[in-house]
Length: 223
Image (cartoon, rainbow, N blue to C red; front, side):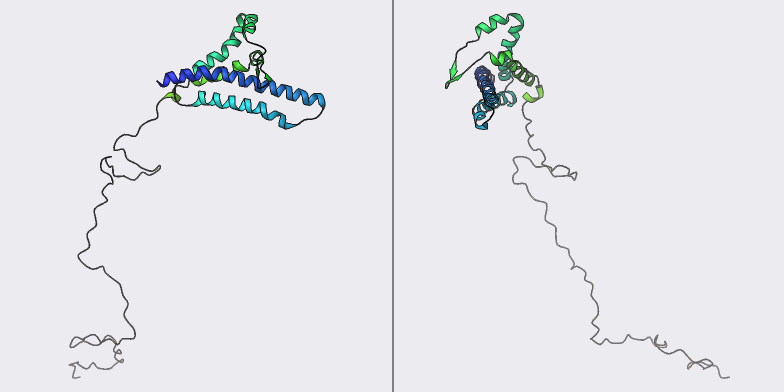
């Protein structure tokens, strides 16, 4: 079905684009020629032909760049290049087949102009080149079921969850430690502390050393 709609879009866009390009080019040429003739200009006179050309560009962009079906740009491209290609075979016959004397909103519509200056051939080739971009017509890749959602650049292992398990269960809760955490403290200098017990028969580590030549208290020397 999408190929059918694309085919119909190409059939409609091609003649509309031809007419819009004709109106834009003819209006621009007549406006600029008039400026040169009178020696002054008014840029507001270019608004109307610019609108025609802008709408033509939007239509061509939609047909040539949308990721729908290659049938539309293929049909539109072939229809637009056919008159110029026919100029190589039978130019007078082609020019006689193109209608003349048409007007749109009071403006003349010289449909031969874009054929003679090669604009239609250029636009048609652009659409045909868009058709041969095979990768552009592929479908967008679909994410697999249960695929992991990992941010770009994150190489850490990530848990995978199935699409049916949502919201996913969080990580298991950590059990509390059996003992209280160790704390480091400093003694209070204002609180008096008891002296360390001293073993019998030993001197206090803070006692003064004996004088030189003095006899120890527990010495058994009777000399």
